[in-house]
Image 1 (tube, rainbow, N blue to C red):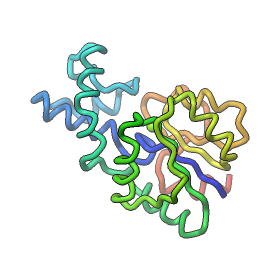
Image 2: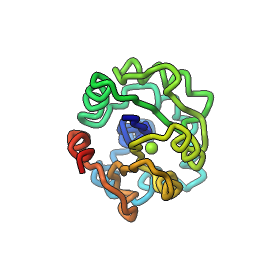
Image 3: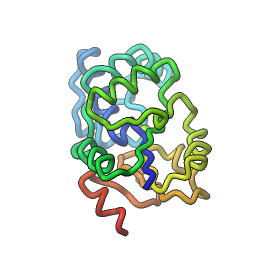
Length: 187
Ligand SMILES: [Mg+2]
């Protein structure tokens, strides 16, 4: 089968990692419970930043957010490795900015994610992912972001939603825990 995965906040816990970096950099101690209750993808509000300040903070911290020690979600790595070992095709589709694509691919390989040449797509807009997903004729695609998922209504691909606080309104098969992924495929 052909499996497609978003990276940030689907396979790796990027926002939580960024949240802890913001606490360090801003000398704050905003709780993890506050993080878990956020209703939007952006994380700056609990730090008292406006959207404009938040966007500037995100962009100036981006390389550190991307390329330090952001952890994968529990069992995500093992799940993808098992799929690859069983002979399935694994595709990554990330809207990270173009200038970070090569380093992102290398970073993902360092973490142990199985990557085959030609199956790493990066640098498109969120709304452009749908074209790649259709062209590849993926069997399964997993993402977290409502803006992406809303574009995937008419694809034949089975779309799964990585559960997050900000996507509770989206009505799709919901992946809470990577350990459940293989079991969800049978349904
Ligand atoms: Mg994502």
